[in-house]
Length: 467
Image (cartoon, rainbow, N blue to C red):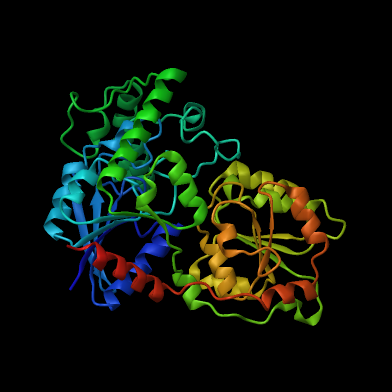
């Protein structure tokens, strides 16, 4: 029996990586593998009053989960790029993986896992890295700058100092824990004591939650915010991370052609990188349903995804607002940026309906109500699950010509493409979109890759890497 250690993200997180990695692990167990799913809980606020690091283990659907509680690294260590390379959690994580004794290690996310681990992990088993997002080369993980423009300087890191910002070490874990405790009476007493200590910079540095605090090996609260020093620190983070990948990874699996191009430009060795399109668990559960516009009605548009600038909902809203006869639009997704959400609602026409957050169980009904899914990303969305879900449901996709979208949406065949961020180009498409055209596109849709076939591909790669 092959034993696999998967490093991914907290399965509670509403995001593409857990939505992919958890079902993949279950598919691998159904094929006879023993799968251990490891995640670090800093970003998702997995802190408690025990303070010391500990593992929270559980089993579900054949998977064994190992969650690191009270970690020293918050995961999104803005302004502290060194923590993405080396953190106080490294030895603790390494010991856990050594105890599992895997035959293969597959990293799906570095959120909370420093890249220095690669050297140790490679001495245990072959290491595969799937690139679902850009955490290796972008601390914000998206290659989209705060203003919404696509980052073009990731290979030199010259703009990181203006884009990423800074976060006090130790503050993130405490803020998360306060959020979890705020409805408890005694949380106020803790807050009264701890908040002044943080403001006065008297609280121990990054290991305050993780235990074993030490002034000698923790980052300082004093952050040198000059352009030159921050650029040098981000460049050092990139160099160290890519050096670890190039020396210790067996394969780097890019989830789209664009991801491969970006990783090569950043400095990953060409011979390590393969393009491997992922399977979609949600897509496997969906099947084509009749289009509402089949009776000659105007096509209904659907946007799925987080409401953040990089996903591009504003491009769709702007395009629709400029039409003489705006179509009905359903925007479904988690509001991840409240100011951005207010702006969207402020300029949306009366034909735009904000559905709000949705779960996988809502997908069939949402897709059945729409004729076309619009994926107007402004940043290099690596392999959008929403595109795969739309195609699985027999819905053509109107998408940006960016990231992984063109790998799945073929212009004029199963959908239409436009330049990212160009609301005028999207408007021109919508002006000529009618029921007959939508149905023609729908007739050329091929179902996306099933998760089971994808699991078989990975198992074959794993076996080839074993001695």
